[in-house]
Length: 162
Image (cartoon, rainbow, N blue to C red; front, side):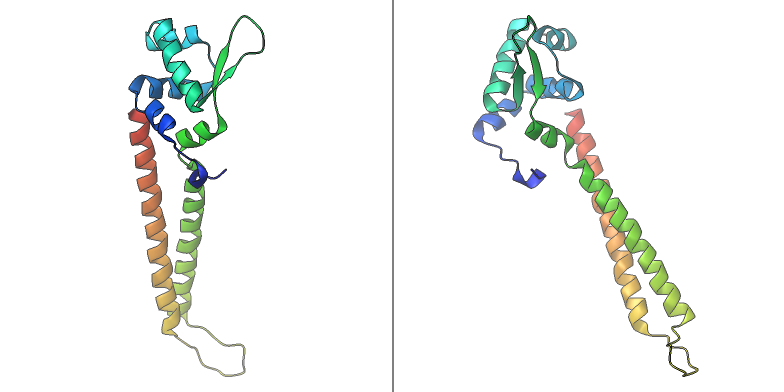
């Protein structure tokens, strides 16, 4: 399921509207936890945490892992993990693409400056402006992808501090 395929229905939006519930989701991102562990971490009463967990479970953001033992564990659903990660794998793709485009732009500028010698027997060097324009375009695209990556990273950091 891609990040674009995540559906936020009114129940999920309502569940995410509480700061305490968002803090609970951040805690559960690290590992699965029991009510008492969450209560202790957030300095909230167990009954308050239970109310929050009921809301999160009903909205489909959290799973209740009840395997018949004494402790009941809460964990994030796969969809919630994708929401909290914010598509961090996309940043790797953007950075890799920016580096690749930057390298191609440098190569294109070098070919323009050095000149291109066709394989034919002609003894001339071609300084084709197409190489320069392609280099400019690729350099612009690389800078733009770098800018997008930085903006996405800042947004992810801002969302984590909420």
